[in-house]
Amino acid sequence: MPLSKILSASLGSGVGGKVLQVVSTTKTDTFSTSSTSFVDVTGLSVSITPSSASNKILVIASIYAGNNTQYSHARLVRGSTAICIGDANSSNTRGSFNNFYTGDNNTYKSGTQNYLDSPATTSSTTYKIQIATGGSGTIYLNYGGATDTDAARGRTASTITVMEIAG
Image (cartoon, rainbow, N blue to C red; front, side, top):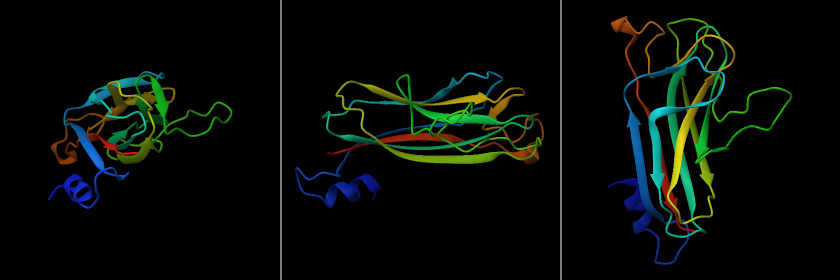
C-alpha cells in the first residue's frame, strides 16, 4: 500500500497532517552547466495546487551530481524563490544541498533534502532544482563521470516529489 494511503487512512476527516496529494517527477537523462549563476535543471520540476492556503508542502528531492574541478552547488526553489538554504555568510553560496566538488572524473555525489514548506497559497506552485558551478569547470547531473563515455561508470536518476499536507 502506498505511503500516502497509509497516512491518509489512519487519520480522520478534518485532522491535520493528512496527505492530500502527491506529485513527483524523475529525471533519467543528463544535464550540465558551466554557469556560475543558478540555472533550472531541465525536467526536474513539479507543480502542485494546494487546496488550502493553510496547508503545507513536503518537498523531497534527491540528486546525483559532480564537478571535478570546482565547488558546485544546488538548491530547492519555489517559483523564483530559493527555499531551504543556509544563512548568508560573507560571500559563501547559499544552497540546499552539500557541495558537489569531487576532485576527479570518477566520483560523483548524491544529495538529498526534505523540507516542509508553507507557500500560503491556493495557486499552482512550481518546485524545482537549480544548480551552479562555483567558479570554473562544469557541474554534471546524472552522469557517471565527466566524460560520460565509460560504460563502467553507469548513469543515475534524480527526483523531486511534493506532497500536500493538511494544516
